[in-house]
Image 1 (tube, helix red, strand yellow):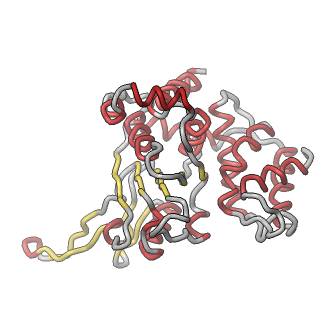
Image 2 (cartoon, rainbow, N blue to C red):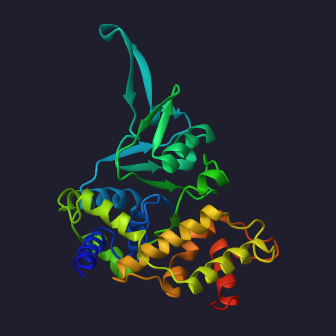
Image 3 (tube, rainbow, N blue to C red):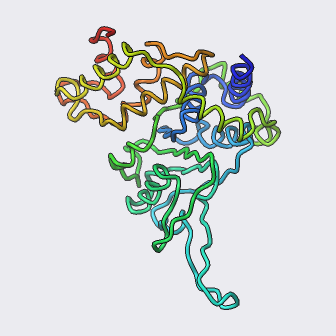
Length: 306
């Protein structure tokens, strides 16, 4: 109960910064508790960068930002090894990826080669430079933003990159009342700078460990496998989910249960995180005429609980 209270304090604080988006905030915290990485696809100016700053401040985590551009090189992210004469040897200079919260801003403006610099870090929590592996800090959380693909200068993220993101969400425009609060309220940068730490890094690591112990019944495992099988039967999607995606759904559902103060997963937990967790990994069949999220919801509605 105490941990549920702390998590509520965290989400309440984030909701004071990103107003009118409680579902997106809950998804963000869910992704973090599940030790995953988050992709936010939206137009510029709706609060993606502010959310990343607020999250790092609220958790007392180290924060770095990389602005992805067309001329960004992989070494600009991971770091370089250079010869230093006074040390008579090569010395590794860590790049901005050596942090606890990395904001990969407008990730799809960079070339695929630079995008791929994040793959090893997101999966293995390490980077390899000139054959030498370097461990990243813990916890390590990538929050990436991307512009809509119809904007100039964007490169579509490859499937292998998308698969490394546990969840993909969109903030969207605020409603009228939330926008009015933004227009007449305190400057967001000053507000973020004044945020107290709600949950220290060690507590976050303990919660991430606790997520792994949340109970999942055999019936819910059957339901999850039925969902995964439905994505693979060719009726709904061009290509189905991988086992890694199934593990991602399970982790996110367990994290959502923990936020709800429960030590067991319910069907609602799975259904509440499913579109955000799998839609970005799937392409609807051509005849569907739906977005990936709409297709996921239609598939879920067609299946009965196991």
